[in-house]
Length: 332
Image (cartoon, rainbow, N blue to C red):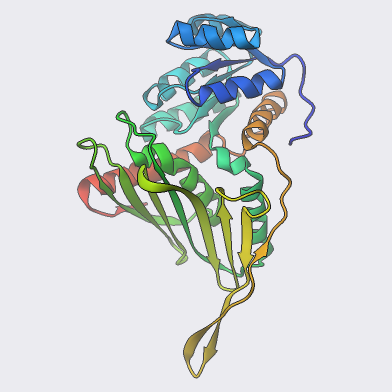
């Protein structure tokens, strides 16, 4: 997708110029499709508009401009559903940052609207477009690890603390998206625990367990109250193990451990092997993601992380949140 030739007539507006929105503004400008920007803080929007030589407009102005075919929503999560619906009803293709919505019925409604209007609805699950994760999927599907038995992810850091959403909703969507991408359908149950230390009822640390019907399992550990940064996904198979460590250099982000377990007189014995680093072609995942949105806008193809994929992730988040609140496992 990185070599996809972009239609020079495509025009996109970025709605939300905050911490992450600025990266999307930069990428769509570099791809020569940025039409304008919008932010509730007019000064913030004007600053980005001045830097990139585009206009700063009100949201309704953006929706009414027929030359804008797509809008990119990177606003607070509680506004995603309403703004995405407004975009779809205005005939715009919509890219919305994770999560797609905060409530399952809202996401279902958005998916149906996109289908009814024949428009692209894409969710910003960035790591699905990371070359390292693409390579990890390739390794798993090749059978090199044997049957995948379980997956675990750690996404840990000190900050950025939030008060409007807990750590589960802030950090875990990317990991849940990757795990579902690796293990597929058949999710049977979700259980989670959470702990609040900085703000009452806003979890700073959560652990989420996913169980699949065929015996596969996964867990996601996220925290913004951690002494160091860690972003690691580990896949354990019957015949080997693989690690995606996004904190390492590109030459070491993906590694395979061809470990296996032998049986000696009825007892399992580890048979360790040397770690192998897998070569990657370096590219910016966000640029790949932005190009993918433009490609889908032009062709009408369903995005890799379309509304339905976002809905699947949201259902897991919702189930995990209910489990945290009730102390009970959420069954699918």
